[in-house]
Amino acid sequence: MKIVKSINYLGAGIKALREEKGIKAAELARIAKLPPSTIYGLEGGINKSPGFELICIIADTLGVSLDWLREYCKKYKKPCKGEV
Image 1 (cartoon, rainbow, N blue to C red):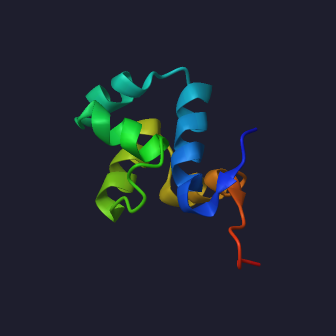
Image 2 (cartoon, rainbow, N blue to C red):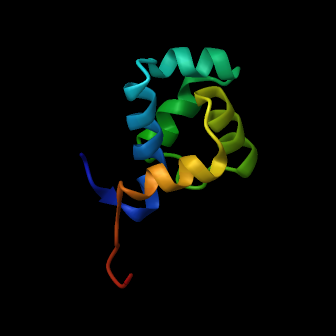
């Protein structure tokens, strides 16, 4: 399991879940009707402030609830300097 700074743990968790389900990033984007760059940017840490609507779309496309996705992604969180 790859641990990343907390600022991008959501993207890391989404990538891990997507891979677990055997879905390529471009396929997730196509199903969700999003540009592939949106998925790549979120997973790669380029988009550090994804909107609520985007996360809802991704969760729905992956077939999970927002609460479930949040809990799943927490295992990819590592505290940043100054966090407890």
